[in-house]
Length: 365
Image 1 (cartoon, helix red, strand yellow):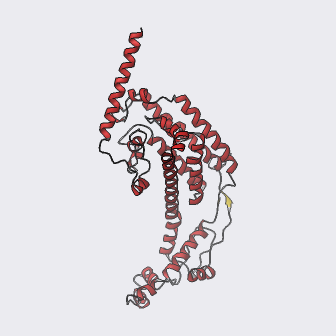
Image 2 (cartoon, rainbow, N blue to C red):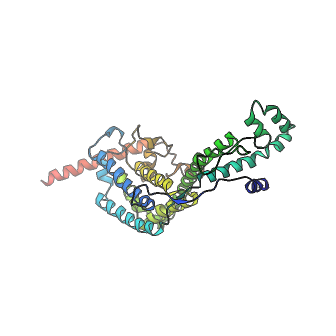
Image 3 (cartoon, one colour):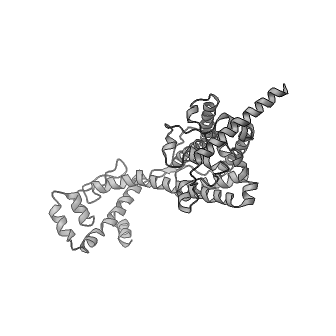
């Protein structure tokens, strides 16, 4: 830490001037677009799955039959859509209230230079580390300085080579002086533009997943919470895309709104990054409930938690399944061997129910 602080005090950094990020859509602040995207995604993506179901496309990949939908789903689609629209109205008002100033840009070169300094500070420990195993790093660096200057710099603890400069496009005059080596510039650029965002997304996914798992599991383990709140979502025994967010208003606020806002804030995603996160998360949630196991659906390739995996959770006999990481870690995965048998029994019972209803209607005539 002392070396890092010293590097910051003694190394030149490019100046910067922060400016607001221009709106992606002129006239519409990015913060408002962030609020709108999951709503637009719900109706567009959900509408696509609804159209596929209504047209009876790909019946060979459908998990449940039409008879099962008639027998087991007693919640009208209109009720579901009204419920979700109410949730969206509440989150829109809350989102507008919480939307602050737009993100700013202009410090990109400065921030990359700081990463280069961190890399340099890390390198300073290399000679001492090699000395512990009997390697004279400085002598070896002198031998390699002409043939492998980058490796020599690394071995010598990050001492700059003569003429190495920070290769910036603008804002910092390039002069022949000691600075950062090309590999340090490349590493800093890679960390700033790729590794940091990937880490941020990973943190957001893990936090969101953890929040949903433990809130969701609490809803199942606590009889009062399940009866009064979470059971509403499970009235859709045969899942479909529009039913993905059907829930009590309070559960939706705690489960989705608080969890998403908290994950985005802790992971420190930018507004543009958050747009990708909420859009893909919404698409994934609808896909999990769509009722189709399409082999070419990219959301089905993301791991064990696919449509069929989540569908088991909605069945009366498999109510402990949700996310895979915590399910495996805490032993709440559904492990029975009779999944296909139970599905077949449900299909046959639904067919008998539909036939009985049809016979009763014929008799009444």
